[in-house]
Image (cartoon, rainbow, N blue to C red):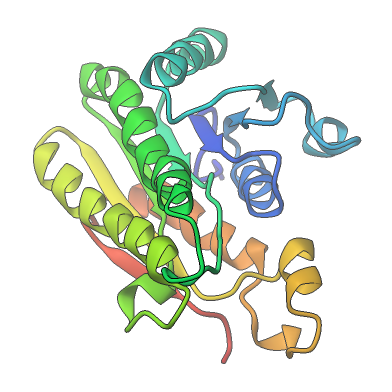
Length: 237
């Protein structure tokens, strides 16, 4: 039986991080060829070997710069022989109140969490529209769908923007064989989050592999009728 994504060419942004690597691993297990994009120049030791020959590494890219995003996307399309899907994982988090914080944080989170999604999606669109098929999946945040708490303004504003971009883009490409959806995870069980929040119950956090499973489904033909959705993935809480 053929795998869900056999020989499909996919891009995963933030591919060197814990979630991006887990997503790449899930896509590769489903048969995909995966280009890993990251702002960091080199992947962590052992990542390329772990993912195998279906992983293609593209480091040192600032995806909030439209020209850099286009150059990287076009290079990946050439290396992979086309493009089928984009998974926008790259993101950042800061907890900072408006009174005590720096407005530069708003620029940072806008650029990393929202502008990079817009720039990379724009760069991918000509490839998907030419093929008249494809998938875009964005990583939003469960916190952006709820009432924002103190210190969460910049983060939730940028991630709420991801949800609205997802909805608008899904309408823009409706009828072109392209679906656009978002995942809204709760706190993800990553080494960085464990370091930042050492006193909480990690068992209630969502696993990166579980998010990867949802993304594999959204990229598969079984999800062809789902578009413009923001899907909560909160784990077993």
